[in-house]
Image (cartoon, rainbow, N blue to C red):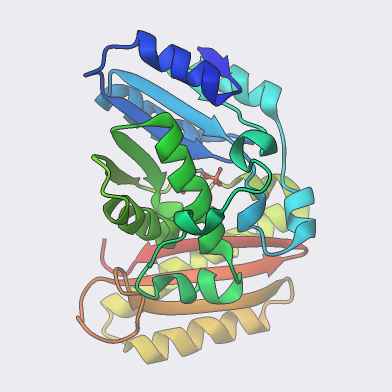
Length: 281
Ligand code: AMP
């Protein structure tokens, strides 16, 4: 696996590849885990070449502290990636991604309001930052397929819309969430949990399962939502940001009565975790 740090170097590598070779791309912020690796493996199975990127994107963080504390583990990440058939790891620095004085407005897209709901409502500017960095990476790396996790379901839908808006010849593929054995969605942020918090964090998964169970028994969306929010509020270790059941494409609580998905964001200690689950799987 080649570790590439600049666009010039990437273009050199790219010019040596077959022009028709499909390039699968997995954008990440590093501190890799099995969830990331499952995306890489899917890409290596489905494409001739696979490129992974690691870049902690400052423009998508609404809180400076969260950016500073974001886990970093480049050496370990490289070792993990070497266990896959990933061809290139692209690790740009801030100067590569955000040259001084650059006009970022051309990387801003209309996401038909879905960027203002859920994560967008609770992390102001988050999806603007995601849109900027992902569109820049797409432009730089020229992939034919991009693999993103359903773990960040709203982000996945944003990136699908972005690829259409950019008129790219690129398919955006969503992959299922990889979970720990107790159901907790794998996340780089889990590294920041202490032992006690890690044990308690499975409550998020349990609540998603509970919502699904209630739905299968015929409870209404409003009742399910009310009861799960109440359980979070009564839990001594959690501070709930939101628990919402909405349509999985519009992110609204109205419209088509199928395709409901629950979305949750909650703090356990200082760490904010998110997860989601379809009500019918
Ligand atoms: P991140 O490094 O957190 O920005 O994530 C990079 C990509 O990996 C995103 O597309 C995430 O949705 C995806 N991802 C993160 N956690 C998981 C997981 N547990 N299962 C599957 N994909 C994941």
